Amino acid sequence: MANSLNLSLTDELRDYVNSRTGDKGLYATPSEYLRDLIRRDMESQTTLRHIISGLDDIKDNRFSSKSIMDIADED
Image (cartoon, rainbow, N blue to C red; front, side, top):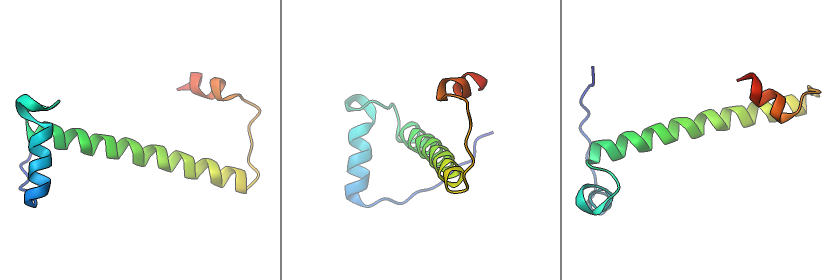
């Protein structure tokens, strides 16, 4: 079940959201646009956590003999 969230925007931000939604934009509604922005942010945070984890592995001399394609095939 979806919950409601009220959001206050400056006129500038609201104009921008309006330009991205409706007949002139890619998204049908402001809610659809904001949900997509949140999903993309969640994905980029996941990617960032993976990168940081990989950097920690390098720093701690933890390496794998597998190729990136081998690792990708495991998912």
